[in-house]
Length: 262
Image (cartoon, rainbow, N blue to C red; front, side):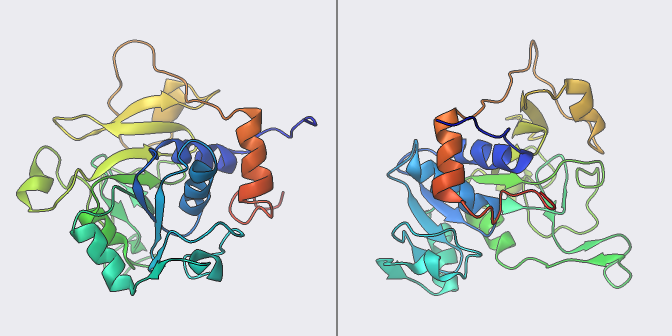
């Protein structure tokens, strides 16, 4: 194997997301790095997963990297193509094991904002894409994995708008609200992997990516994470073989894993 270029942060996030997936799971896929992660998982450690795309396609045959959940590769020889409302119904009826969501803002309980930044509902500074199917997934999936770039502007004490629910106000508040499933179980950023402390449901550092210190991770957040006792593990790195699969077989054109300007 020829000498590989160093892995970039987007490739690292895609690999870590893929490692959240377990074999034989039904995985609900949205646009972006979750698509890369799911396809990578299926080509490596989880060949028996079922991919459910937000647009309604069920487990298509492998093809090129879709440019979105509405891209034709998500339907390629798919045995079933449902309307989007029915694909959300799969979540409501417990047929989806794991879903993925990105965010513009996230708080310590895994609630996320994809609506607006700054000001009130009519006086915002930046208007974003809104919910789409995000709140359906966060409310109904058995387990959610959240993914985004880490900074104090994105990891905030209080959301400017609650688009999609995580653990609400922590503790048992999600269950008391009548929402099914476990809610968020992991957050993957470009700095670390987080889980949620079982009782308080506050975000907790699970592992730090190579080269990232605990102090740097805490500095890149607007709230303080829970920190486990003892030495914090280092996030697993992909083997050269897995990185080759990611680059050559999963996203060869760098649709989602190429850095801007690179």
